[in-house]
Length: 69
Image (cartoon, rainbow, N blue to C red; front, top):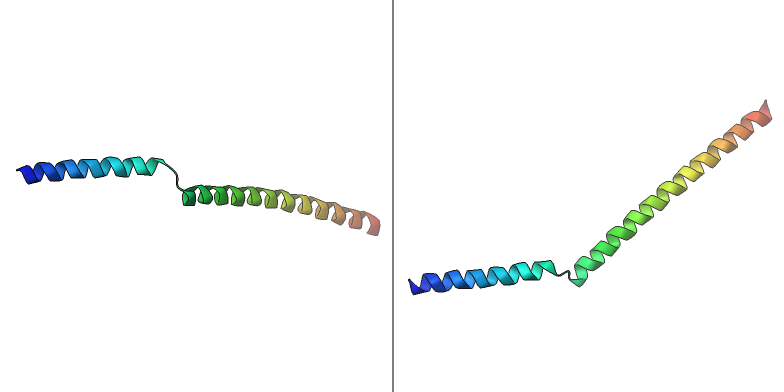
């Protein structure tokens, strides 16, 4: 009976430590978040640049059309 109580208390203590440790972010998690943010920002910029290039290409195509008519 004493062994069961001891094991229950140990499991409770280990659980508390485990949950407490999960709340704080470690350096790897912080670095991962920074990488995620950088990838997202890069993707957004790439989309903007792609749209700008597309618009300029369409404008150039229209200019070529006008000049050949």
